[in-house]
Image 1 (cartoon, rainbow, N blue to C red):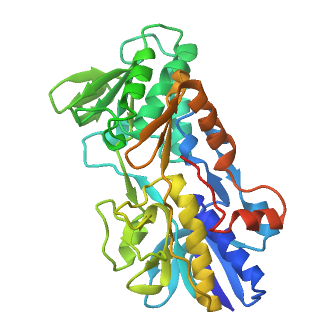
Image 2: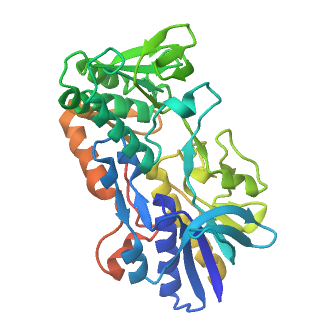
Image 3: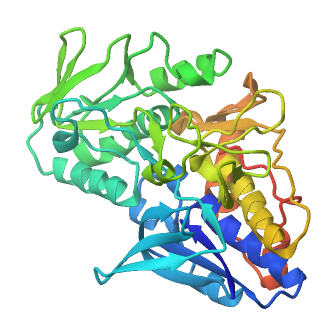
Amino acid sequence: MQRIVIIGTGFAGMWAALAAKRLIDLNKASDIKVVVVSPEAKLVVRPRLYESGAKNMSAQLDTLFNEVDIQFVQGNVTSISPDEQKVQVLKADGEQEDLPYTRLILAAGSRLRKPSIPGLDKHAFSIDTLDDAVKLENHLAILAQQISSPARNTVVVAGGGFTGIEIAAELPVRLRPLLGTEDIRVIVVERNNEIGPELGANPRPAILAALAAQGVELNLGAAVSSVDEEGVTLSNGEHIESSTVIWTAGPEATPLTKDVPDPKDPLGRIHVDRTLRAPSAKEIFVTGDAAFADTDGSGHYALMSCQHAMIMGRFAGHNAAADLLGLELKPYEQKYYGTCLDLGPSGAVVTEGWDREVRFTGMQAKEVKRYINGTLIYPPAGGMEEVFRAADPEVGGVTLA
């Protein structure tokens, strides 16, 4: 029995499993098994963790996997041994198990990068994982029981990128019903001199207008130097009293990429070829946030986003199965790129292209964001035929997320 092992049940991992199983079934290859390894059989809807109700931002995958005959192994992959073609799995009961593979798909995603800033681990919150977002939400509820003070009423968002902007735009309307005060301050601290530096200049006017409408303050050109129980100290010496500091400043690829001896980009992503294969280990395909992949042959590379992960997952799963079936592999290609950034009560902004030309803003853009967050990025519905049709790499659609 040949085995395709997929590490992770994020967007890339889920779609990789479905795409691999689709091609296997189309070719009636009963000797190839698809196995997914993850701590839980669920998809965390990570792009929604800035919203309220974080505990509900996941979708169970066990029924879907059972319906299409994908085996699920509960556990954490702790290491990959490319030479021996096996992964080491720490099971839920604490036992370590070796799991051999014929082909491996590394889809273990990314995590929030936390530099060695004094007090960051102990005192700062994040929305990187489901547990992190639930912890933050519980903390905000506890604030409501405390006496009003500048520290209680001030939230500092460290990082003015995509995630920082979305949570900052959302926080004022979440905090006012909880704290019952108009003295709420939400402050974005960004080390660059512009908000959303990676988003470019085109969407910035809409971003600035939305944040200003909510009373969100910007502290630009300063970095976080330390965090303590009383607040945050910046690189310019300023100290901001705050009981809530939210760290959003940048991701890094899963540490499992270190087990694959190929060049990495500064975020730790593995340089892959056009079929998403690791050049040094022909049995390993890499996808999603773990892969540094060319999207269009024009110098654009996939971002750490579900927009790219969902399509890359389909290609990685298809190619791993095609490799075992002796079929031609499909070069990964994703020429379209767009962005849909939530701006809280002000709506959203939708951009198109790598220069992020603004297409529309306000509530029209908000409807697009609601459709993406509420429908488009969730697991496919329907019977096996519908699921496999959605898993075809040639069919996978645009998400903008």
